[in-house]
Image (cartoon, rainbow, N blue to C red; front, side, top):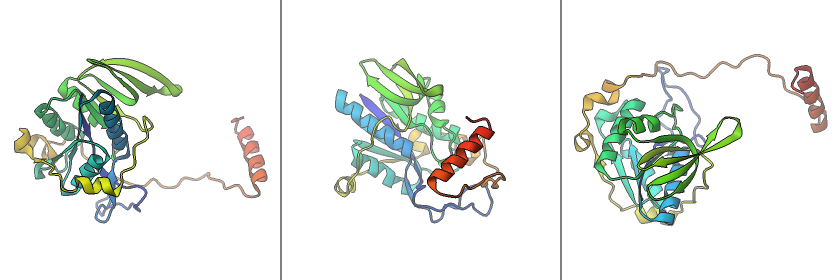
Amino acid sequence: MEILVCVKRVPDTAENEFELNSEGNDLDRDDLVYSVNEWDNYAVEEAIQIVDKVGGSVTVVTVGDDGAEEVLRREMAMGADNGVLLFDDAFEGSDGRGIAAILKAEVEKGNYDLILTGAQADDGAGQVGGMLAAMLDYPYASLVNKIEPADAKIKVGREIEGGNQEMNEIELPCVLSIQTGINEPRYVGIRGIRKVAGVEIPVKGAADLGVDPGSVGEAGAKTKRVDYFVPDLGDGAEMLEGSTDEIIEKLIEKLKAKGGL
């Protein structure tokens, strides 16, 4: 089975203190520490496990700049077979639709049975996977937390409301957005990183992909972020003091008074 996993380089929430830029429409990204998007890491691990069972190969792809290459190498050190960097000045400022259009062009250059994305990335929109599937006219499932591969179809488990699980059978090729918790991503050691340090990663721009530069990037964006802010702290928070037993007793009384118990 040939699997393509879409990954993204994002700010590491454990390593950064976030501040807004002077325009107030994004984070100040100048000195941020980056890593692979957490959801994407689970998608890569799932792809590797599927290939271990049924054979095939795993390719990781990202839309980004030179710095995004480190994310591809990290996932290749994890076990992915190939990496592809989609980089062009024309791609800068792409919205979700633009990113999906760029990825679609790369998918059509290959012969993939399964395309995986993380459920969402750092903008929290969770829209690229669905848009990519729609553009390709492929079946799509989101919030996937179980995959059972077969020949021409796969069984997919999805997390739905109320803590319930649903199972679907989907024909290949298809696009799936992977939820965290589907597996336990493997540890990537220094030896693995060194092993792929010299591997050549192809870089493809708009011309290589056959993408109209005017249809992506800021020029083609249909949505633009106009504001980005930290909500003001609201009133009403109360800190309970005392020993653990006293705090528990006070909390229970307050929950009873509010109708919570």
